[in-house]
Length: 223
Image (cartoon, rainbow, N blue to C red; front, side, top):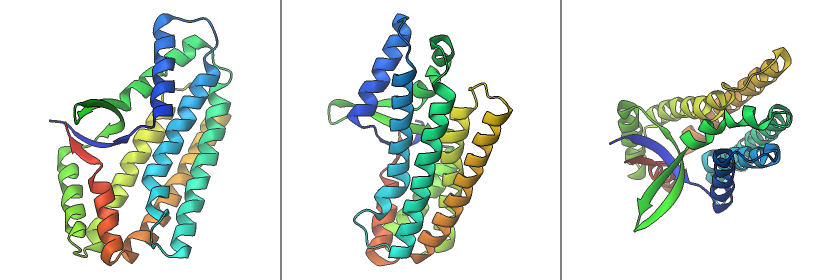
């Protein structure tokens, strides 16, 4: 069994990703820049929505906390969308084909209720997966252990940042300016994640704590 963090991919991301991968496999001559940009931007938006925005939409999170999280989410989307356009728009198909494994490695097809469904995933170390699960299950019972939950969320956020941002950028050949842009963007995201976690987690109480922990618990799977 492998431990994953996983959440369902939208139909739009699934279909465009499969089309892009099939085009590379068939060796099409038409430039794939526009489709690659679409896939990458859809992917980044869905990660941000699942990890951040869905936590404050329809919840009782305080207005100030919700504002911090929404601002952080907006920063990520703006930064990543801009970087994607700058890095991908001038690449040829051979260069883009080398980046295809990034897309493949983040996809996992899982059989659920007799139907194959696409998920966005990354592998988690079994010991941390178990620790994170325990902290979330305690919160699902309404038991407050803010220090442990915050510690787990900060470790999780760092892992998600590495996988979804750093590992995605790593295969791209960057010049000095491009590397500086990605470094500055990454540093801003890290700072925002720390701020969001430290503002949100200690404030969780009652049903909001239960809902938060249930939300993340549902995305810890073993296959």
